[in-house]
Image (cartoon, rainbow, N blue to C red; front, side, top):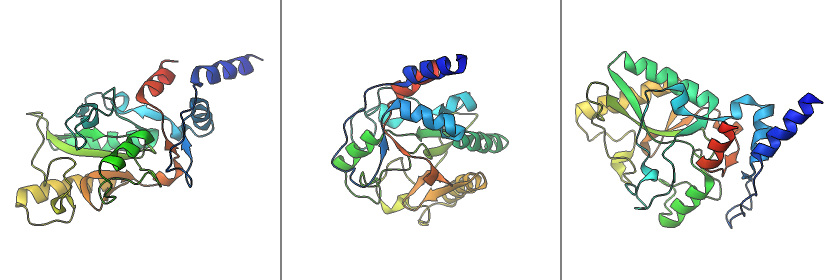
Length: 233
């Protein structure tokens, strides 16, 4: 009986009204109900979306979509937080530890992205080489992708990379070579360190990394505020 009461209370804490489906979702399933999300986490603990800063307290965040410093020129997120699935956070923790030995660290520009943001991005810039299609959803929507770069721990500044974040040009490709030796070395170091911990660089963006096995995680459209509320409970 006590377990049943706890379970009912937990579901109650997680329950909210589901948002409406969009015109893009005929062939995909997007999780909007927090009770459904909590049930999935109860069955599969790796499905939990965790705050990266809980695993890497010293992590530097530069959450571009919580500002207007992004390609939409609009504030997309109300809160500058970085959530990922639990095994992704643990893998990033290992990346950070390895880089710290070299006087470097990672900076996060984006992590879990609610599906509604993917719809917004597509409607602003519908080139699916750089923006995920809402018809299939993004690996960011699954909490299994991160946009990152490297920083110098002494200065706290980003080290030279091929382009700025969200540069929609050929220079953003991780195999583009008309660059200085220093920039190529920095890019290859990031790719190598991420690969060691189970990440694959995206073919069009040197900063985007997918966690291997991302397919097991469903598409999500929970806001950061909803995730924080669940965390508080």
